[in-house]
Image (cartoon, rainbow, N blue to C red; front, side, top):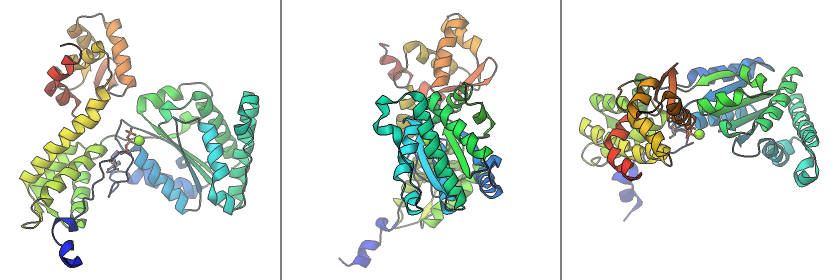
Length: 382
Ligand SMILES: Nc1ncnc2c1ncn2[C@@H]1O[C@H](COP(=O)(O)OP(=O)(O)OP(=O)(O)O)[C@@H](O)[C@H]1O
Ligand SMILES: [Mg+2]
């Protein structure tokens, strides 16, 4: 078979959607204003508000992808970018990455890593001094060369408050010295707010807040259409509206729905490259099924029975639930119900929408619970 023959048919079309955590999507939808803020911050110089940014949102709302995008912008401008997760030992990881950074080496900026090998023998104060020395020497040297340092922290809700306090203090020193430093931190909304309420990091509360809520459905539709057409397929207007509506403007679902709708259309590409309403319906059903098992099912895994009953009590309301009503349905005193409510909020399954009211924080959670009630309860013995 010649190469030309192999290239025809379905294999010529590659699914452009990226329903994978942390994967940069084909079109970054709805982020223009935060990107503009950040670019302005880069241009305005030391101390600009756009250089200190807090990104919050539920699971799958696009926090990691946004950090990657902003890091890329800084990197394109010659800045050194250090990515770190709150799940790691924050300051230590930053210091190690600075020591190993190729760009810093090429600029002849070398740092010592005093406490890592001798960690066990050093007290906290010395560890902090070691961090401060290497951090400030890098930032000063970079600023002198006309560039700067960006620290991007993901999953910050899991960070140690002590590490965050040390980092915040050092960033603040550098800003006061008019050095080129930027700090972006991203995490689950409630966890980040809890962290910011801790001592020693009051400075971080001043960070510009970007909450990643749902993206307007018309922007979703425009981006889906563009992505589908760039891949060589087309989509009918009614199919496009159906698919865009199904995403509810939720970043993860945009990719999931796009992926399966595109795949339904590709099946008949040899006769027509137009995605029809039927394809969209079939693709959306597949996307929601996959979303249910991978996202919703995972979020619910390991909950205690009363926490699960709290959720089932909430499914009776079509919008937000009054916490007192939920406790009444469970037949327990409101104080007891509060324990489960707090735990469910911490896990980002529900959120407080107003004093005394909660709602599900992940789209389709209510439908998922109702549809799978028997199966879920059977895990707890019926
Ligand atoms: N602005 C966007 N437009 C379109 N798709 C997006 C956008 N942002 C993220 N996505 C897609 O959404 C999915 C989730 O993105 P990402 O992993 O960044 O979310 P997250 O908020 O970091 O989630 P988690 O809390 O689980 O870490 C990915 O498939 C990604 O491609
Ligand atoms: Mg993430």
